[in-house]
Image (cartoon, rainbow, N blue to C red; front, side, top):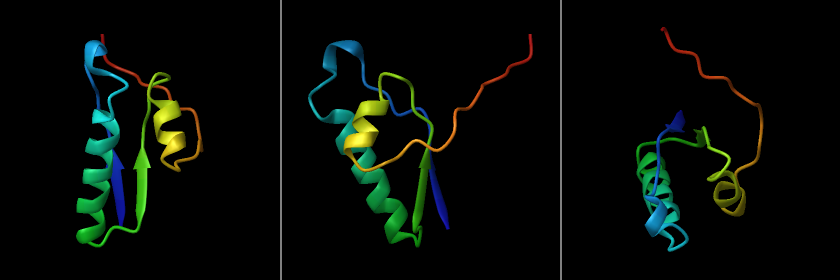
Length: 68
C-alpha cells in the first residue's frame, strides 16, 4: 500500500524548528501502522532539502495544472 503526502507546510516565521519534519514522521508512522510500505510525496523547492535529509529521493518532476 502507498502513503501519499501533499501540502505539508510550515509558516515562514516558524521554519527550521523541526515542525515539518515532526509532522511528516508522525504521518509516516500512521501510514506504517495502517499497512503502508511505500511513501510518496510532492515537495516544493523549499521543502526538498528536508525530505532528502529524511531519506526521500527525487524521482520525477511534476507539473500542476488548473482550469482558468
